[in-house]
View 1: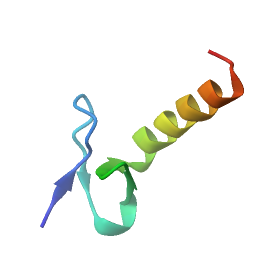
View 2 (view 1 turned 60 degrees about the vertical axis):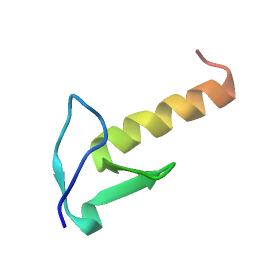
View 3 (view 1 turned 180 degrees about the vertical axis):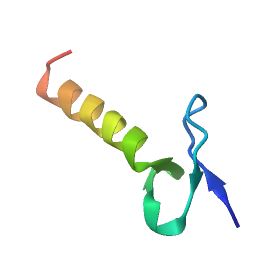
View 4 (view 1 turned 120 degrees about the horizontal axis):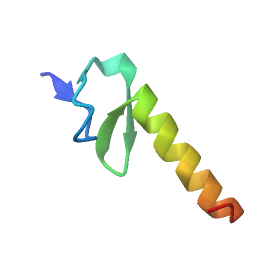
Length: 47
C-alpha cells in the first residue's frame, strides 16, 4: 500500500522507512521536521 504525506501542499509518496507518524498521520521527513520544530518552538515560548 502506498502512502502520501499528510501535508496537502507536499503530497510526496512515502515508503515505509521514509515516513514519520505523528498523531496517526504519516509525513515525509522534511514536513515532519518542520512540524516538530514548530511544536518545540511553541513549548519553548518562542512564537
